[in-house]
Image 1 (cartoon, rainbow, N blue to C red):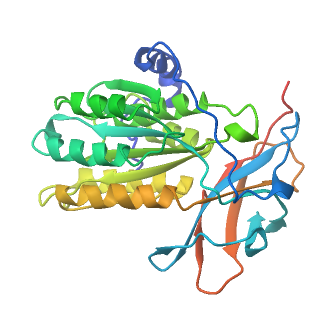
Image 2 (spheres, one colour):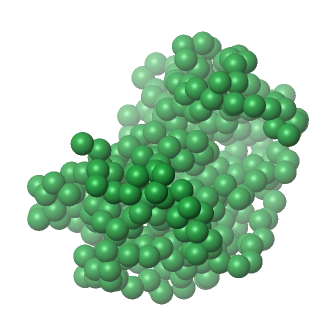
Image 3 (tube, rainbow, N blue to C red):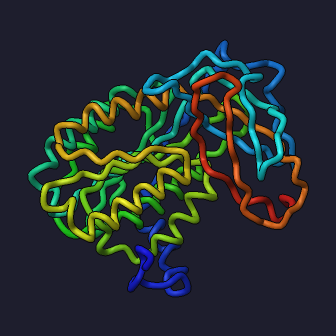
Length: 328
């Protein structure tokens, strides 16, 4: 049985999806400060943006046990698409700027834990740099964009503190809206390339989204966004069927997009988890290649990244859907 059993099916929500984004979006766009080109960018591997060329971009986290590895060179990376080794055309270890959506569950079950969650989220937002952008989204029965994308740390903190608990949980709607918002942030040149991430905090299963899980997961897999999921456990919820379903959903979001899933039992663990996510985002490599597969059939292509050093593990998104037709 899938997590979306009993929910509205794809055909019934097509019109709703469009109206959902329109209802949650706020007028006005945030200014996007330019992203500086750092010393970790290989000049030979910075491609010009060319019409008709599909570059597959990957954000790669490399670990040696619990330690992040940041001293690798392009030749240390081996990227395979459907088992075929690819040639890198882009490599950057200079910690590219990020566009990040911070999603907070504000359903009624979060009432007693929300103040601690707010403080942890504020601490996380303060670790963002001037060149980073973030938006604050809270979700209960509705999805509210408390703050559109900005690099104003005070505005982000105020938005986090404005959240209040009440209602049910519409996490799928919130993830969908965040993915659509992130898609609007498009790089016009190499200097404006941004990594994209969603950090979502929830304490239980989705109970009120009209969008089914499968549709939102499909959108996530088609995006360039890594999803970091935090599922708050409690003594009551851990054994409940609903939380097990929620845990499955959060793991899927994270695994398919190259993020991570965390399941703390104590709300007081949140600051440490947010710090771990922040450390990971500041330790990633950005690499890109032009696929040797010239078919334009829209089929799923599996990606595997290996590191040519012993005992190192690499994590990135599991794959992507190939192109279907050339851009107009």
